[in-house]
Amino acid sequence: MIHQYKLLGYNIVLDICSGSIHVVDDVAYDIISLFEGNDKETVLSRIREKYKNSSSVSESDVEECYNQIEELRADGKLFTKDEFEPMAGELKARTSGVVKALCLHIAHTCNLNCSYCFASQGKYHGERALMSFDVGKRALDFLVENSGTRRNLEVDFFGGEPLMNFDVVKQLVQYARSIEKEKGKNFRFTLTTNGVLVDDDVIDFANREMSNVVLSLDGRKEVHDRYRVDYAGNGSWEKIVPKFQKFVEARNGKNYYMRGTFTHANPDFLEDIKTMLDLGFSELSMEPVVAAADDPAALTEEDKDIVMKQYEELAKLMVERDKNGKPFTFYHYMIDLKGGPCIYKRISGCGSGTEYMAVTPWGDLYPCHQFVGDEKFRLGDIWKGVQNTGVQNEFASCNVYAREECRSCWARLYCSGGCAANAYHSTGSVSGVYKYGCELFKKRMECAIAVAVSREFGDEE
Image 1 (cartoon, rainbow, N blue to C red):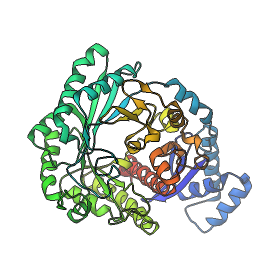
Image 2: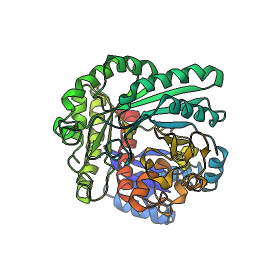
Image 3: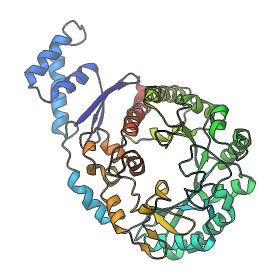
Image 4: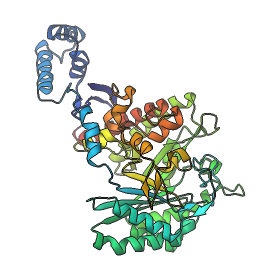
């Protein structure tokens, strides 16, 4: 299976199952589009007719190009067959029972009152609460005990707003560091914050201990302050931007992301990205809102064309800034053309509910943060482990081949079947397909590959 498209001045051909990406001229692009389902003479005849008035394309050029494509097919770089489906369950079974990451809900409360918050202003539709050190300690022990031979373990401090329980964050990091050598583990921490409580202590600690920080900023002041307000209705942009600028400068090159959300109010999110760039930030992420269809913030069908265009314009902006020596990173456009994720990740997905779980302030386990508060998805707790094996098995089998619609999709080995939470909220099943999200994802992948191609070959132009 192949996928062809044109973007940023390139003719791009993806061979889905080999992972090969080809940048070709017009003749090769047209031949490839006809290659399957037609014999050689039919293809040559059609291409020669199309280019008969071209002074730069001879009949022998067309035949030579056809033969080169045939060689690529013989070498397994074009039109390769999908041989991965039988591996999906087998690879997942090899890691059964191994947990490699936890999302610690250190605070089920927040000092902002964002109306689009999927977590119901940090409460997750329940009681406000802060995780105690004892619960957090037990969660880290649970992770170590269930991590098998894995050395690198990931822990996200999440909320709500984690800095409302910052003392416990610091205590838990100290505890984790104290057991690393004995247990043969290496903890990598991430902190997500809205920035309101950021101060010098937070900056110093996070830059010393956090492998990554995620800083919530929606871009333009008027866009950010539309939703990200305190309980008095005051916007937070003026308060947090100077703190984030100081935070990022102090990180001195360590990983961070400015994480924005775009909604029906700002489908033209590229303007928000430009604002972030103007503020001095270069590691950026803009995510489509997670909202019910009747929510005023929810993206509509009318927004889709605008969003698709924004992704293309974003790709052009990235190429332009590359040429001007001012590159930046966009999370969804990060792709490695020469390596990329291993086949396990490509067919098995994010690992929610199996390798990755969320822990509530009370120690309950859920497949990920987007399922917290929905009792039917409660897996167990950090003391007794996973007891709801039915739900866990459902997530374990939720690979790219579990969805019939994915089997013929060119992007299946890039999205790995998509987000189970988005599928559930859209269709009522974790094995469903969130079609709106799929269309956005495919556009992002086309743009990501085009940007990567430009970065690989741009200097040769």
